[in-house]
Length: 156
Image 1 (cartoon, rainbow, N blue to C red):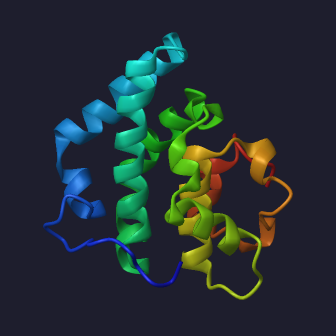
Image 2: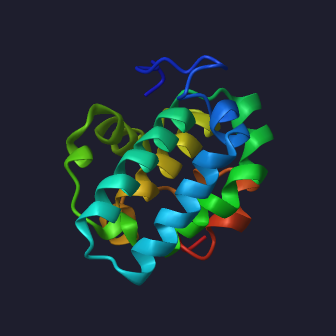
Image 3: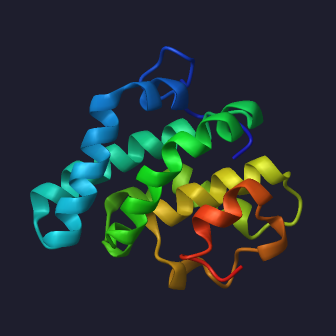
C-alpha cells in the first residue's frame, strides 16, 4: 500500500484536503450515512454511499503523514458516523478492489510504519466490519491520534 495507486494531488477530487474543504462532500457523507442507518436495505443509498466511501478511502490512501494527522480531527466525526451506520457490514464489489485488498495485507504485516498502518485500518473499517478484520489488526500499531475516535469500534 505504500505505492499510491490513485492521483491524490491537493486539487484532485481524491485529495483529503480537497474532500474536507468540500462541504457538499461532507454533507453527502453524513446524509447518506444517516439514511443508511435508517434504511440499510435501500440499494440506492448503498450504491451512493459506496461511491462516497470509495472517494474517502482513496483520499486517505493518498495522504502523507502530515496531511492525515492534520485533517483527521476535521473528518473523524464524519468517518465515525459512517461506521456507526453499519455500512461496513454491507456486501460490496469494492471489497475485491486493489486498495482494499492491499489495506488488509498491510494490517496483517509487522513491517509497516505507523502511518501506513493507520491508513490501512481506516480504509478497512470503511468496508469491512470488525469481525472480518479483528484477527489481523494489531492494537499496538494504532497511532495515539486515532485511538479516541476508534475505541468504540475496536477493542483497544
